[in-house]
Image 1: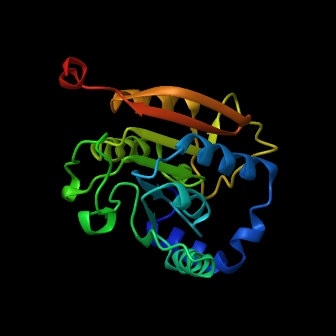
Image 2: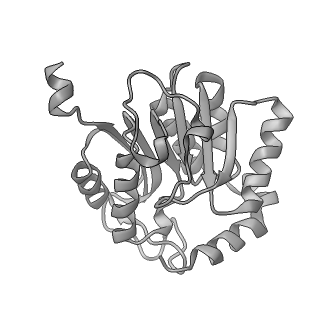
Length: 227
């Protein structure tokens, strides 16, 4: 990570009131739509949105899910998310501090999950679907591996990741990211990290040569296969 968590949090809290208006690129909007499309929660599902920001993904999924947990490092962004939820009367969401490698999710936050997902080890929490959009690229490659393993340990059946990622050699003259603060990975690296954590990659969507969406399903265990 090129900046500390505290520096990232302060940077996003400063721009939080104008953040939604600033995210007006076609690529960003396409990523949001694809993440929501592939998340596809059922009325019994608990969804965890990591790097929730102002809650765009969380609030879009809430009407179709049982409960949505949004986690972010920026209190300013979380305040915006809570305000937006209150304005539209969405009550099945919980916004609070959390990080990729420490999502701060417990049973009180997620209530109960669906019968399709086994009880997770982490703090007795149950999460069916994990999503993240335009957030993980702040982590280094090794930190991304750790974060993906933390997600896997929650045992969701699906993980949908929209982010800045390299499908080829990025053009240094036209970066879709800020090199001084962002640290995107290649699609190949992310695919390997997901499969190493026990996921099966089921969809890869290229929005731009530097932006995409990966969909990963939890590989069934031997015990589940034989039931």
